[in-house]
Image (cartoon, rainbow, N blue to C red; front, side, top):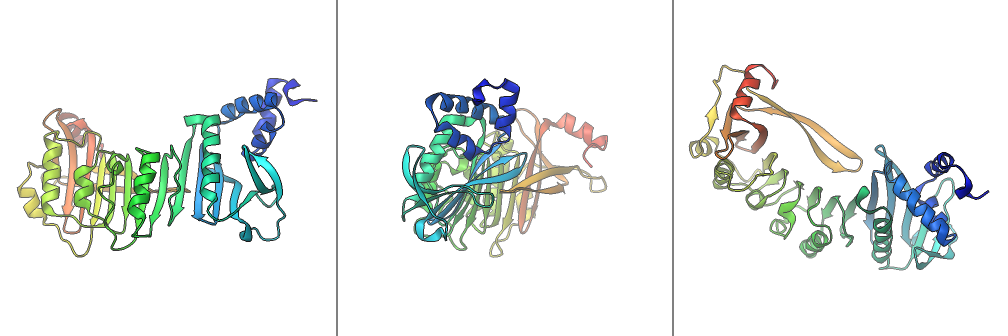
Length: 354
């Protein structure tokens, strides 16, 4: 009996038990079945959270999907000498003539290719999912050494390990996938040439590991959250940042900043405080405690729960909104409370920030 002849409830149950690669194979059978599967995939995308691309090397890439936070790998692309004892067959897959190994109970569907072909194949697969599922789900990427040029990536974790090509690769990536929701950069020690790359400042949540010029990153940032670890940061940048936020000169979307300063730099809290119009709680009071979850890895999605409190806060002149601020010799914390000073003080008085 044809699947289209079953009641809709039965069709949905059949489709629910099929993984993504099985649905793709089904679509190859006929034009009518292709249309049916496309509609089913769009329905299934309400449960499908993410298409995830793991770019391990120029010789190996893996594609997975996630449902309710759990990953299901369904496709691998490898250069032919790396496929082991699996026997490939010729087939047309997503309008590409390829050598492929069919999936088994223990092995994913495998595409075998020559050197230098993986990126083109990955781009075709990605565009295939974009055309079928669209922006109903998120597309995420982890990449080592080389960043593949794929559009509409929402979140990514990128290792910038090649000093010669890192800047051009990141520039290219952000031109294909502008304004990412989350971008984690793991930068080779001593490489600090990426901070002014076009589009980087618009990232909603930007996380930079092992170095960088936080002076440039903070001055240019237009996103929501900025985390920088072991960075260069000077007093004058912090002072300008606080005064700009207070006078509504930028940073309207900013929620949180956390910068850990490199050992070779030192901030001077007293000097910074003297140059900014800060308000303070009595030292005998309990200070407001800000609780937040910091995402630091895209897959599996990992969060750290943090909290910090500060005696100092500033008030934005345009709307009276409040931000807490804390600076030490080796770190800077900033958070905007999304409430005006009156509400902030009332809630603090009622112990709502503990």
